[in-house]
Each structure stands twice: as C-alpha cells, then as structure tokens.
Image (cartoon, rainbow, N blue to C red; front, side):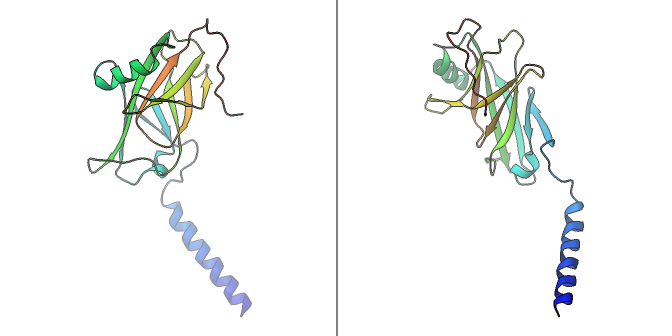
Length: 165
C-alpha cells in the first residue's frame, strides 16, 4: 500500500511539473523594458496576464511640478518617472515587490537617491543600489507611481549609500 501511495504521489508531481514546463519559468533574469529605459524584473509573476506596464519620463505637467517641489532643495538635477500598470483599463499594482531599474541620465553623478512622491507631495526615500557600469539605479518596489531620481551632486557633504547590505 505504501509503495502505491509513493508511486501515485510521484505521478502527480510529474504531471504538475510537465504542466509547469509549458510556460517559460520566471527567473530573476526575466525582465521587461517598460519604456524610457525603465526595466522591471519578473513582471510575469508580479501581474495577472493581460496587464500593461509602462513608464514615462515626465518633463512638464502637474505631476512633474509636484515632484519638483518635493526635491528642489536638495537636487542638483532630477528625473521624474511615472510608472503605471493597468488591466482592462483599470489601474493595478504588483502582487509583491519587483526589482525596477531606472536609467541614470547622462551628466549625473553617482551620488543619487530615489524618492517615491505621493499625490500629496510627500516624499519617501527608497533603498537603492547604484550600478555605475550599467548606468542604472535599482530598487525593490511594491507599488507603481511617481518616482524621482535625484542627483545630489559631487559636492554633497557626505556620500549617500542607500544600498542593501
């Protein structure tokens, strides 16, 4: 009886494994360029099928102005990114944290921080990793919205390391 149970369980595992192989497995290397050089890793596992994920660099408008007001005192220069996700024209959020890479614009120093800027104009510092070789700043984000990449400049009093240890 025990051997039959083991064989039955083994057969079930094989069937489930074969079914899973019909879809490309999502790994840390699965990435999607969602626009303006912004890359999201594991987008397939973070959203339901049919979700459209997009990013846009803003240079004008009320969202840009709100972000500008939030960071203007410390920023030498900054870039505003609006990241969105929608399914059937309804805004949705990832079902867990996803790694997002933001491109570092030409002329920026490596003394960078990333803020989430809320609709009320409050800013929240995000933990990031700067990869100078790839010219990207990476962050684990649990929601999509307005993010501002801030160049603090080379003359800042102290280096800002917002990397995970």
